[in-house]
Amino acid sequence: MTKRYSIFSLARNALSHHENWQEAWRSPQPQPEYDVVIVGGGGHGLASAYYLARNFDVGRIAVVEKGWIGGGNTGRNTTIVRSNYLWDEAAHLYEKSLQLWEGLSQELNYNVMFSQRGVMNLGHTLQDMRDIVRRSSANRLNGIDSEVLTPMDIKRRVPVIDVGPSARYPILGASFQPRGGVARHDAVAWGFARAADQLGVDIIQNCEVTGIRQVDGAVTALETSRGLIRTTKVGVVAAGHSSVMAAMAGLRLPIESHPLQALVSEPLKPVLDTVIMSNAVHGYISQSDKGELVVGAGIDAYTGYGQRGSYGIIEGNIAAIVTLFPSFSRVRMLRQWGGIVDVCPDACPIIGKTPVRGLYFNCGWGTGGFKATPGSGWVFAHTLARDEPHVLNAAFSLERFYTGALIDEHGAAGVAH
Amino acid sequence: MLQIECPWCGACDQSEFSYGGEAHIARPKTPADLSDQEWGDYLFNRENPKGWHREQWCHTAGCRRWFNAVRDTVTSRIKAYYQMGAVPPEEDGR
Ligand SMILES: Cc1cc2nc3c(=O)[nH]c(=O)nc-3n(C[C@H](O)[C@H](O)[C@H](O)COP(=O)(O)OP(=O)(O)OC[C@H]3O[C@@H](n4cnc5c(N)ncnc54)[C@H](O)[C@@H]3O)c2cc1C
Ligand SMILES: [Zn+2]
Image (cartoon, rainbow over all chains, first blue to last red; front, side, top):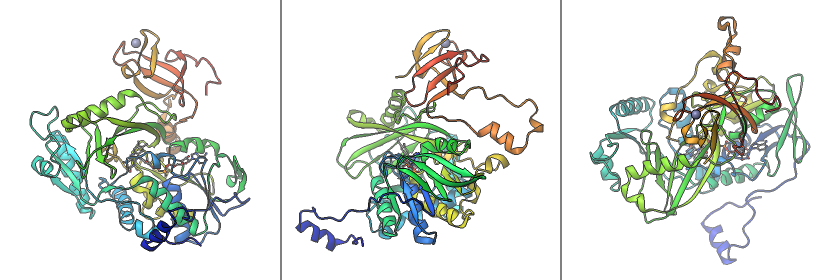
């Protein structure tokens, strides 16, 4: 039985120089058969497995991950969490997730370092401001906290920002969600993994799925780099590799995979205690607890699976940040990396069934799925266990691309992740 | 930076080009005859392969002409260029 983390376990382990901590999860051999297999050990896959084991009784569950858990976009993202989406369907889904975030460290007995430091979306044009007021009002009607700030409000909160009229793109205002913030990405994967493992879920790393076997249009087994795994229920949560997984089942998805990059600076003393995003100048920034400035922007326009993007994007990103924060021009950047994001035409996820019986997909989160990690797991677990969507993900089916009921969230999800 | 060889202008920085996505998607000749499923498939579904991809590029900041390329989506290496409307150079290109 796994021991709970507490102030006492911390003190006890300090006595033995932290050399005797119990492993956080087992590393079991894959069993020949499971009742449900989740493909992809990112935050969403692990959350799905956790809530499946916690909320339902579906038998033996495994998560198979081709690399190490959290090594995909979970460990590469810039960790912005918010729920200020425009349309009811998206707002409700992301708000459910935000509510789960608020209790997540306690729920998992793992500090995910969720910090509600607020998220600000800047407006630089009259049209930006109209959109901000519209979205802010829509959010409030949905019970989601949102304020509209003036340039002076922004300056009071963020002294280092340039709100002057001589800026290249003067700031006219912002929307602000106080309950938004950031979390520790790795801890989210590890916390869900540990909690799922405690409920009996087998987490199998270095196990790549290479084929999906079907008989009469129903899933029967997964071919993996560690042998055949028989199962009749598969939940694919493979982010940038969703189309590759779909092709194994003979399906095509309305998804394209693009590189998305981020950068961090050398650590600085505290200078920025909220998250700032700007669609217009194309960049966003926050400061990590270690003091690094965490910076990002949009995707590369072309598709790619190489986990690196082009230099032009970095240059544009830095130019945008320096426009907003002239004093940051002297900060040195330390690291830069890329992840592969699964972009959907309406900037919303696909969570539900496929034409293959027993095969479910949870994908299309694109540039903004980290914030949805607990909520995504919550509704996907329901979908897998009950063979029908949860009320919160019913609108996010694959069918919407045939009925035309798209949920256009480009305004809330472009540069803002 | 990725360099792309415009068939007319030669090698130029990728930032001069716009991406046009998957090539050889023909607009259905009689859209009204299509089922919702078929129309949605035409509009939204894509191959999105990991590996060789036949795709469209436009030399926006140059000669402004469109052309096709066969690019590896992992390494971004381009192995062939050909004109819009032409038959792809290698049928095994994917
Ligand atoms: C640079 C960057 C910044 C971002 N910033 C934000 C942000 O600020 N806020 C936000 O909300 N979102 C952000 N995102 C998006 C967010 O990271 C993703 O939407 C989210 O992490 C997707 O979660 P996941 O757990 O499904 O993906 P992943 O962590 O990528 O998990 C998918 C897993 O599937 C595995 N897999 C793939 N194929 C196979 C196979 N054949 N067999 C077995 N396993 C397989 C992969 O190895 C991977 O571990 C950002 C993304 C990037 C790249
Ligand atoms: Zn040209």
